[in-house]
Amino acid sequence: MKILIIIALVVIGLVFSNVISIHTIETVADIIRIIITIVLGDYFLYRFALRILALFTTFIGVILVICLITYAVTKLL
Image 1 (cartoon, rainbow, N blue to C red):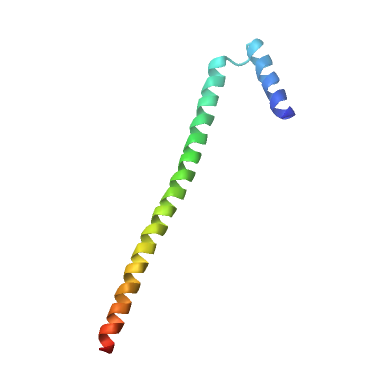
Image 2: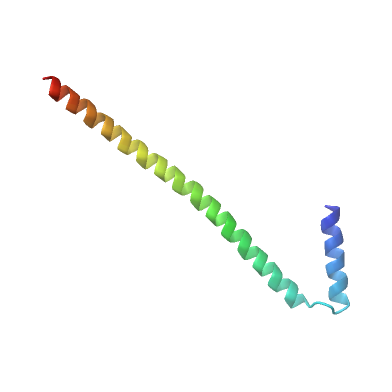
């Protein structure tokens, strides 16, 4: 937390001394915001896709087991 406060004070000092402008800070913040959004979106989409895939493969597995049991019973008769 102390490091973030020091970074904030340094950035404020650079803005007041006109070394960097507020527009530059906004652009960097927008880039960081976009990167964080993409990373979080990919993570949640990945988790959602895995859940759907697991559910789908479970249904397919149940259907295959029923077909296998039916096939075995018909072969025995």
